[in-house]
Image 1 (cartoon, rainbow, N blue to C red):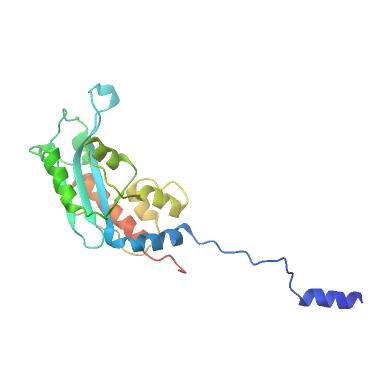
Image 2: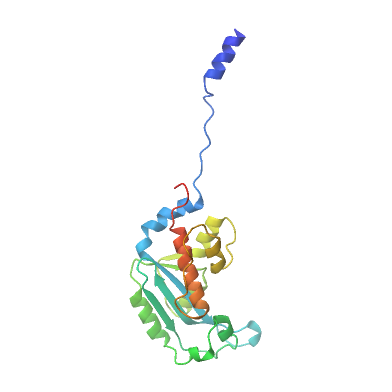
Amino acid sequence: MVEQQLRFKTARPNPYFHTPRVRPSEHARLHPVLMKQRAHLVAVHAEANAHAHEAYVPGQPELLQLVAERFATGERFEAMLAARRPMAASVPAHLELPASRFQDGASVADALARFAAFLRPDDRVCCWGRFPLDLLHAEGFEPSLVINLREAAARVLGRSPGGPEQAARALPGGDEPRRAWTDGRAGRRIAALGTILDRLLTAPAGA
């Protein structure tokens, strides 16, 4: 009788046992969402004229350089703005551009009018953190649809992603990183954002 019960128990699966579900990775979750929006993704990077706190210069950091690239088509936007406050001495070093590049910049109104014409109503502005958005907000420009690539990279990596260049190197994907198409730190950053989008839009292994 006992032997018969043991044979029955071995042959019949436990009705209360369920094979554990394999949860999709964050990359696998994010990939189809971004793929649906692919035609509307625009990488955006902004640089500022920002004084150190101890400089005691009144006012907030102001938009000084704005670059963007439409992911699907490669269309590009670039604007250098005239400083409205005294130029911080650290700006050329931080932005990796000679001081002469900041002379004869565009007005805020002209630069943002061009940027508004570059964007389409259903575009998603893809930026690294909130700083570019804060600079645009301070000038009265509010993108309606935004994707924070820093948050997306952190989700996929499962940790702090570091800066854009570090995240571009750390994210999985076999394509070569993009090359800068404009000078200075903005060139490196917008190329890194493009590479991050390349990585996130590459189907994860096993998908």
